[in-house]
Amino acid sequence: MSYDSSAMLDVYRWVRDSGNYMLYIYGQNDAWSSTAVDPGTKTNAVKMVCPSGSHSTRIKDFPKPLRDSIYITLERWLEMPVGRK
Image 1 (spheres, rainbow, N blue to C red):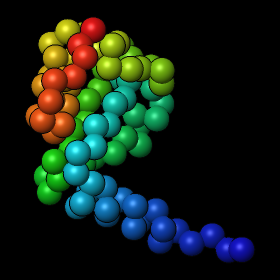
Image 2 (image 1 turned 60 degrees about the horizontal axis):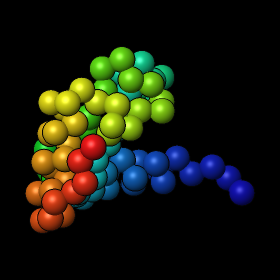
Image 3 (image 1 turned 180 degrees about the vertical axis):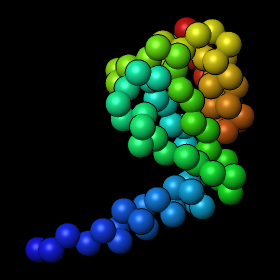
Image 4 (image 1 turned 135 degrees about the horizontal axis):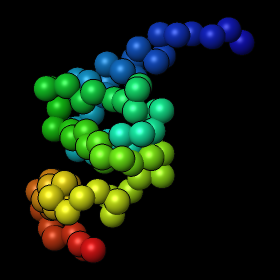
């Protein structure tokens, strides 16, 4: 089997152009943040970076104002309340 790099380009294009209702969560201090997804302007997707966060960052780890923003976004997308902690 040979490697086909075009597959990742297809994924990138889909995320950028068609990946609606995606919430991308990153920690500021996570090395993977350097290759973070940029949802672009064509989709209804959100990228959130937790200050001082790591690879194990979860919604609960965000400061309250950012966490509330995430919950508001999820409630708008789901058209229902979500459990806030």
